[in-house]
Image (cartoon, rainbow, N blue to C red; front, side):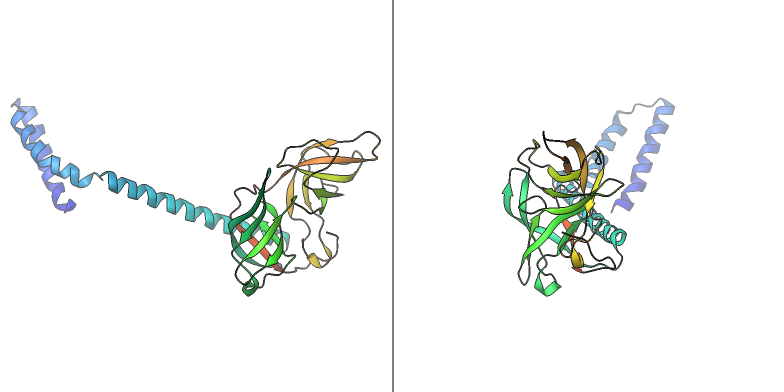
Length: 256
C-alpha cells in the first residue's frame, strides 16, 4: 500500500512546484493535497497505540541485550579466573531476606538437577556475589558476602591477607560497605583491589574473584593491625545474571 502511495506523493509535489514557478494560485492544489495527504499521513505515521507498542518492544529488546551482555560478562570473568572452572549460568529470581545494606540472601533459578551443591561460589560479571547455602531441586538460596559470614581475601598488588566481613565493632562505615580486619599495618592503601584468597578445594571460593575496592584504611588505638573499608564490586541490589561454580578448576589450596 505504501509503495503505491509514493508515486502519488511525487506527482503532487511536482504539481505544486510547477504551479509555484508559473505564479499560479496554490490554493486549489493545497486543497487537493490536504485531501490526499491527510489519509496518507495517518497511514504512514504510527498512532499512539502503535508508538506504545514499539516503545515496549524496544524496552524488551534492550533487556534481552543487557542479559546477553551479562551472560557474556560472567563467562569472561570465569575464563579469566580459571578456564577449567565448571559452572552453570543462572538468574536471580527472588530476594529472600533484605537488610539495611540490601539483600542478605537471594534465590537463583538453578538447583540440584543442574549440579549445584551447598558451598558453591556465586559470581556475577563484576565479581563475587556469595555462596550457596541451601539447594532445592529447581532453585538455590545464596548468602551474599558480608551478610553473616567472613571471607579470606588478598588486598592490593602485594596480596596482603585479611578477613572480610559485613561489619566491625570499632569501624564506622556505610551499611553497604564491607570491612577487612587483621591487615598487616601500613600495607593496604585506598584504591587497592580486593580479591578472594581461595578455599581448600575451591569450596566455597576459588582464588582471585574480585570482591571490591578499598575506600579507606583505619587503625584503632592500641591495635597492631589495620582495618580497611571496602566498596563491593557487585551491586547486590540489582544483580541479575550469575554463574554458580559446580566444579573446581586448576588452582587448589588456600583458606576460606
